[in-house]
Image (cartoon, rainbow, N blue to C red; front, side, top):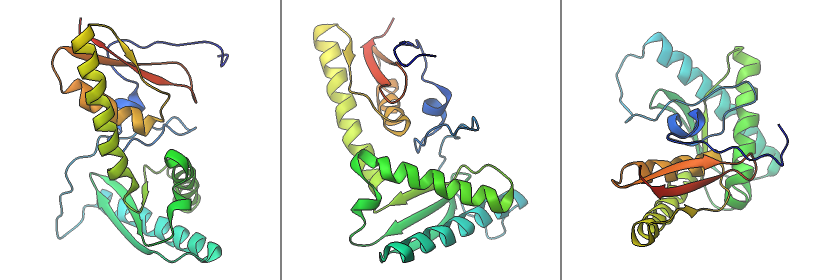
Length: 201
């Protein structure tokens, strides 16, 4: 498909947008992310949970190695949340690991997933976060989505938002889809893929 070509999707977002509550991109291997459920703990992990925790440990070791190379200090937590391995890095002077609108973070996440794959032979749905970026960005995008909804309801016309990553689009879709009278759809191809918020049919 040419990058000049525009693809418009109606009704529902793509699988990576509709299923990935954490918003990570669909990988080159065609993975899609499952929606994040509330983290539920049991004292004894099932076999699947043990595998996921092992993935988070491998990922944490990989990220720790990167921080050492970069001479960055950060506390690293590995856990399983919502049925997926998670690594969180907290500390000062980490903004450069996030990058503009999370671009560097997304790249680091993909590298970390590859590191897990090399050791396990299994594609990983690992979520990597640095400095709580994802939670903060989700709040910002909720405000963007609500503002677009207000404009649609006031003027009765569709609103096209700026291009966003899959993570960002998923955050917007979640907000719009929870409001009556409006709908959202994605159009275009990466990296110029964007959301249109419109009156519901």
